[in-house]
Length: 86
Image (cartoon, rainbow, N blue to C red; front, side):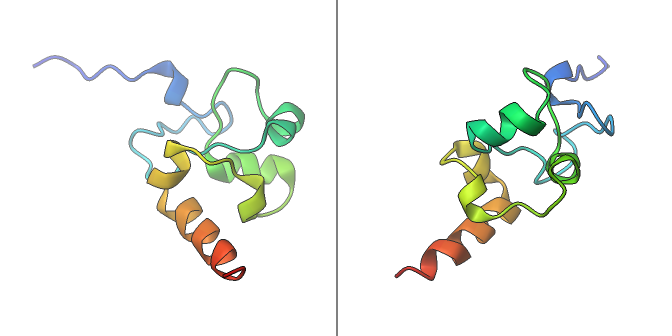
């Protein structure tokens, strides 16, 4: 049986976790946040990125993205936030 190949892109630069095995790790934030706290073209999981920022991210920090829609933590955070405007 062939060994599963992990795309290096989905390995967190900080903790080394494989985001394909860690639910709710993939996300997209606004450019200004990634430019200040991100690791350019490498990957950080949500927990490690929040540690770099020094706070829990809020709905306005995230972009409209399929990654965020697939991440139940981000999706629920954003849904709760935007419902407050309805």
